[in-house]
Image (cartoon, rainbow, N blue to C red; front, side, top):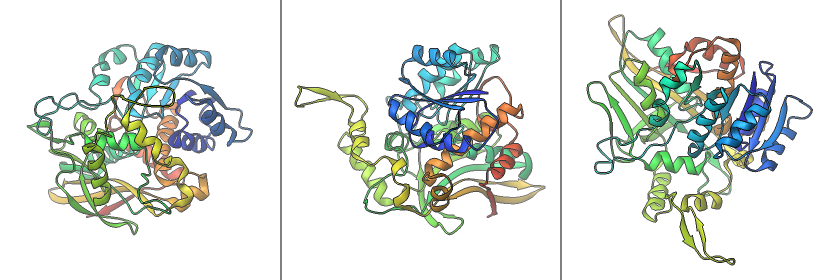
Length: 405
């Protein structure tokens, strides 16, 4: 397997450090718009000749296709923000490469009823091309991070091994992370966080299908394991709700994120001021008027999440809560994966949130390389057998857990 990794930020760098300990691939080209970031990620790996750095604009499909051909890469792993899903998705297909990402194509709210009806849903653009990928025998594995990704694997495991009937699958994410010296310092890309938190959340119900609610709706307190404790969680737009019902029979599917009241109020303020917008606005500068995206300005004003590891303390938890029945008796479980920031920094030099996101696509790549996972079309993680993934994740030194509720 020869991999083109596009994106050498926090998650991309963590991917290289995790992959460097595995032997399943022949080469990994680490490409970024900023060549210095790609070179830094590769240099940190020492003399591992499998890794090389390259410069590429993720939005330039022709350049990405050419880079895939130049290095004879048969897989494109997308570690950029969701803006670049579609150009990279199309470039992989043009090059005849397997495609893997950790998110999906962007949504667009319903023009008249944004908090009741879906407009363009997450992944719609990709699923519109599913028949073409399948007819070509090509695979696009979408939503293969931690959430979405591992959370979907948990859903498949629950459906196959733990339940006969499922009432609800609810992804629940929470943490007790703190960052020394900052009152507001998101541990993940603020661009992506704004996108998913301020868009209308999507809920799935059998018989009704997908529908939307207002941002931060249906608050609930969820008790997270391994000392994290109770965190208030709210509805947030997320890919699992669009993926899980396509392949798993459940009467309801939700995603709730433990954001915290202060974080929610900050996001609301950004939206109120228009600073969540991606459309450029014109501002004065020393060289004359310049068009800039307000959301990009917000991201530039905040610390890079990848650099916060030394200041961070605590744990992050990603998991899937499932309620249903087994052999006629009611059952409720929480399948989860916890990463302690002190462990991930000591072991890999990566903060917990980006490391937890990064480990899952590497596990998936190894399963694809071995032929344990295979398929054609545009597919989510829940299509594939869960047990091999969970066993391999444990073998990577990062076990998962299950709690009977």
